[in-house]
Amino acid sequence: MRIENLNELDLNRLTRKSYGDDETLEQRVAEIIKLVQKDGEEAIYKLTEEFDHVNLRQSGLQVTAEEIQEAYNNVSENYLRALRTAKANILSYHEKQKRTSWLEPNLDGSVLGQLLLPLKRVGIYVPGGTASYPSSVLMNALPAVVAGVEEIVMVSPPRTDGTLLPEVLVAAAEAGVTEVYKVGGAQGIAALAYGTETIFPVDKITGPGNIYVTLAKKQVFGTVDIDMLAGPSEILILVDETGRPEELAADLLSQAEHDRLASAILVSSNQEILEKTIAAVERQLEDLPRAEIARASWETYGAAVLVSSLQEGMDLANKIAPEHFELVVEEPFSWLGQVRNVGAVFLGRYSPEPVGDYFAGPNHVLPTGGSARFYSPLNVDMFMKKVSVIGYSETALKRDAQQIALLARSEGLEAHARAVEARFKD
Ligand code: NAD
Image (cartoon, rainbow, N blue to C red):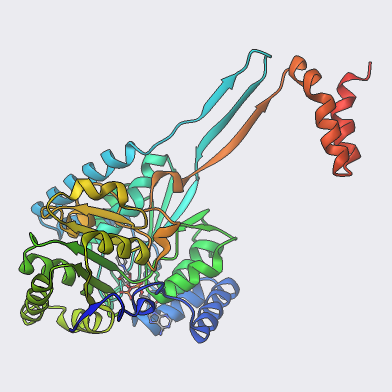
C-alpha cells in the first residue's frame, strides 16, 4: 500500500461504488424473478438446488417451531445473554426514534393532522452465503417491532444441510420475527415481493445482501417498498497524531474482511501514523482467518491518504460519504458539527466500528456507495407510513370556498370547484 496525497487520489475508485450496474447480472436477476412469479415454489426449489446445493422439496421452505427449539439447544448461554443485551440496547435506541400521530384542532372548528401507522407485513433479508449474520436479524427486525409491524417475515439462504445457522434462528425468535423461510438470493426477494403458494407477499423488504439480492430489491421496488440499495461495506478513519497504528489497522480490517469489494480508507496529516498503520495491516493480515478477502479489499479499494490538515481530511470524508466514519482525534466531539455525509460516526478511540455493528444500539444497516448524501440508517420511520387527516368545519369551508374554487378553475378542473360550491348552494 502506497501513501497517496489528495492530488493523486482517484476518487472514483473510492466513491460511488455500488453493486449494480452490470447488465448481464440485471438480466439474470430479472429472469430469476420472472421464474418465481411463473412457477412459484417449484422455481424456488430448483434455484435453491442450483445455488445453495440443497433440495428442500421434502422439508419445505418454512422453518418449524421444532427447528427453532432445536436451535435454542444448540447455542450457548453466553451467546444468548450477549444477544439479549444487544437486543435491549437496540430496542431502547430505536424507541427514541418513534414518532406518534398528531391531530391539531383550530379555532375555526377544523382539525388537521397526520396518522402514523405501522406497515402490516414486512420482509427482512438476512444474508447467508459466505457468512451468517445474526446481528442483521436484530438490526432489521427490532425497528419493525418498535414501529408496531404485525408480521415480520425473514428469508435467508439455507446451508447445504438444509438448515439455517442456530444463532440466526435464535436471533429471529428473540427479535420477534413471525415467519422464517429458507430461501435466499434474488429468488428470496421475489418470493417476498410477489408471494408463492405458501409465502404471502409483504409490503416492504429491508436488509443487506450480495449483488443478486441488491439487484432484485431494485427490480421489485414499486411493487413493494425497499429500505435502500446497500453495497459493499466501507470505513473511513480520520486520525491525528494520537492514533495508535495497531488499533487503526484492526479497525480497517474489520471492514475489509466483509467483502472483496469493501473499502477501508485511512486519512491523516501525519505521515508516520499512515506508514505505521500500513505496516500493522500487513502484520495483522498474517493470521486473520478471512485474510484472503481482507487483502483483496485492502489492495484494491483501500487507501492511505495524506492530507495537509484535519480540516482537509474532514472535507474529504464528507465528499466520499462513507458508511462508517471513525474520528480518532484528540477532541472528536468538537468535529461533530462538521459531519454531514456519513452513515454513522464513531467518536474517539473507544468507539471502534464493531461496537455499532453489534451492540451499542444504533442500526448497522447503513447507506453505502456515497448514498449517505441522501439515505439514512435503517430506522423506525422506515417501517411506518403516514396518512394525512383533513377535518374541515362549515365555518372553515365557507371562509375558504372561493379561493379553493378559484385555484381549481385555474387548473381547468371545474368539477373540483363545484364540489366545494355545492355545499353552499342554498
Ligand atoms: P447472500 O445471502 O446475500 O447471497 C447468497 C445467495 O446469492 C445464494 O443463496 C444465491 O441464491 C445467490 N447467488 C449466489 N450465486 C449466484 C449466482 N451465480 N446466480 C444467482 N444467484 C446467486 O450472502 P453473501 O453472498 O454472503 O453476501 C452477503 C453480503 O451482505 C456481503 O456483501 C456483505 O458485505 C453484506 N452484508 C452487509 C451488511 C450491512 O449491514 N451493510 C451486513 C451483513 C452483510
